[in-house]
Image 1 (cartoon, rainbow, N blue to C red):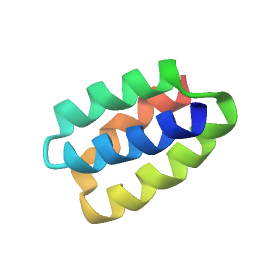
Image 2: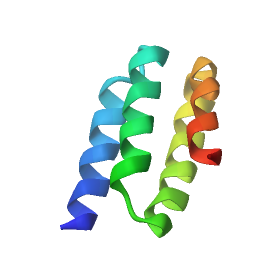
Image 3: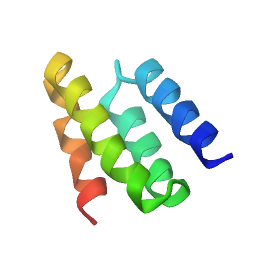
Length: 65
């Protein structure tokens, strides 16, 4: 079940990556839902999205908390 939530989160983040505000809200939700080891994988995934869309960089603050 948890792995399915991780994959769902990645799908949602890809779809909202056009808008930094929506992206940040989804990252904030993901931090509350995902397991600690999945958060590290999420950080790597988000870094790859940031390489394509640098304005998403502001959302990393939610992963550092």
